[in-house]
Amino acid sequence: MPALTISRTKTSFLNKIKAAISWTNVNTLNVDDDAPLKPLEKAHPTKPSTTINDLPPEILAIIFHAYMFWEDEPDHVDPELEGVVPVFAPNPCAAPLLFCGVSSYWRNVAISSPALWSSIVIRDTCRPKAIALWLERSQTQPLSLLVSLGQNMANTDKFARLSKMLYANMSRWKHVSFRLPTAKDMQQVMFNLMPQAGKSPAPQLQLLDLPSEAYTTGRHYWWSSTPQVFSVPHSTLRHISWGCHVAPDISRIPETRNLWLNLQQITFSTISTLDLVSFLRVCKNLRVINIKFLHTLSIDDMPTIVAHNLEAFNIGMVVGKLASTICLLKTPNLKRLRFTHRAGGKQAVVLEKYIARLGCKLEYLCIVNKSPDLGEDEIRTLLQSPLFTSIPRLSLRVVAEACRPFFPHLIIRETAGQWKSIAYAYYDHKIYSYHFGWGSRDNASAYSADYPFLVGT
Image 1 (cartoon, one colour):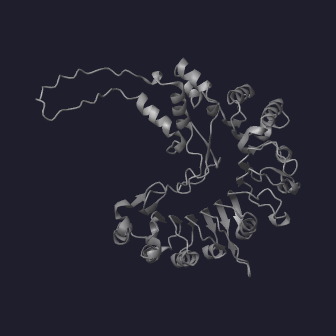
Image 2: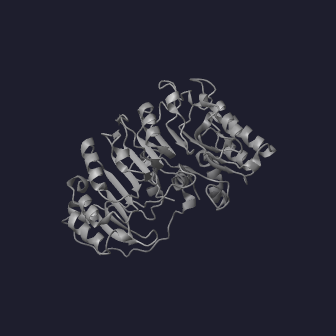
Image 3: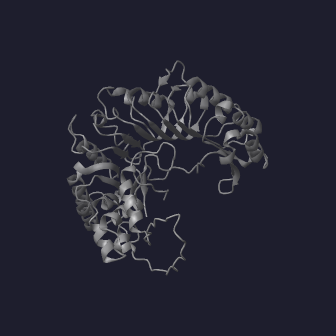
């Protein structure tokens, strides 16, 4: 699990924790400079007067919450936490049930803390009684739900019981992901979620994760026969994760009346540059775009899109020419850019021209290149450019064949400049590549199968 942080609103609680676990009391003495010095009395060691079980229940509850969750706001610098939602399975070896097995005091505190039970993983092996208990203990807390049920659950009594429980708590849905047995089940979720414009039984919904094309009916995707499900705006929805390898034809949906209208973040499994431009034309408030595979298309007279609010652009893999992608976008407020590419030769020049044309001030740039043709000259061109050396956090990963073993250390010594104290260069044996740059390190991990949800332990 990534490093956890406590919200700024919990500062007072942290101060209480510090006070509660202080093992000694210090008395302040006023010393008179003119008074004769007296020998100090020998201090006798004392045993700790407080244990963790002596902490007030509200402090212990905050500790439990800090273990399970982190800052709610998206982190536009750390790719590991950007938009990730932690969820937990009903497992005695995992939180929050883990806390219940320590002592009766911990159990009482955990059970009395509704937020600990509000983030739930529901899979085929779950017991409906356990899910019902978690929903009851979560009381009125907003819910984060990762629901993944296979085709073997179709038309079963267990699926019917789970569906009834989930729909009964629809008013509390905040972050939800659904992988249901059939396409019909998925369509039913969407119709229940937004039966008509302006009236949703899920008024707190912020993140909606929709499934892959595994949910098809014949030649059709689960959503293709019911395009009207995307024609109803949702006032609170801010993040959609689209798992299907084919994007819906958003050009057929009115720009002023669609599901995507208020989005600030969007995640695609696969999308082409043409479809991406269509989405950007409609989703004018997007701050973060995550794409696992971006397929570039060279189309004459394709209009350039200006995304004024875009701050983070993360591409798992650019399939095709990099220039065909970045030349279509103007992102004057971009702060974070991360992409993986397999091409070599003159990529640094293309990227430099793009950033210079935008006039944006990048705070983070991560380039993962998987081509042996990239070469030392290309790397040197990139790292010697003042445009790139001004970026406070820069990460470059290249395959072992792209340069000689001593080159990463040499080029970093030559170019790090003001960032020398936070620069690094090393060989990563796990992925057979060199990693060098400066600033906090990017781990270049792939998106997990459950992204944007993270199953906690």
